[in-house]
Amino acid sequence: MRYASYSRRAAALTIDSIWWTAVVLFVPLGPSTEDILAAPESYAGSIVFWLAIGQCLPILLTGVMWTVWGTSPGKRALRLRIVDADTGRAMTVRQAGLRTFGYLLSFATCGAGFLWVLFNERKQALHDRIANTTVVEDETRDHAAT
Image 1: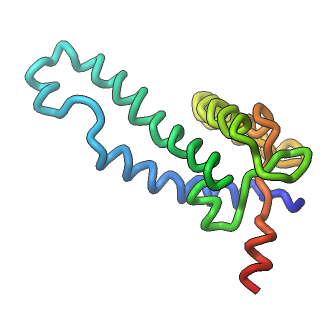
Image 2: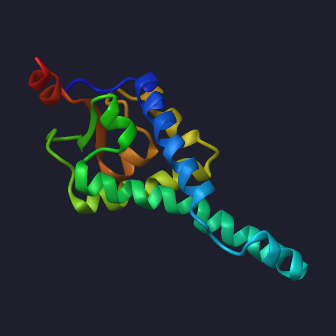
């Protein structure tokens, strides 16, 4: 297995962040500005709601994509895929669920969970370690293109 480098994984995360931003900006989540202005006492609750739903929804959608495709849109664009770290086979639904939970932790630590990629031989981030997955170059797609 050829493990994906930190820079390739960061590039994939950047691509994913673009669609995450679109989801958060253009899908109406929570009360409207007019509702908040009409009831300013609910402002704090609205912010907490937006943070919980608006920030977690894209991660949960990514987890669904991991389950279905074995990759995210950003990783797919860069020909990377997520596999079981021991066997190199497609991750299981359980691993995708654990990885999604771990992804929330990686973000909750102000991104420190992603830095683990720099310090282990299998290039695993915190969420990969939790799910026993790793990100590899998708050699099957490379061969199919040639």
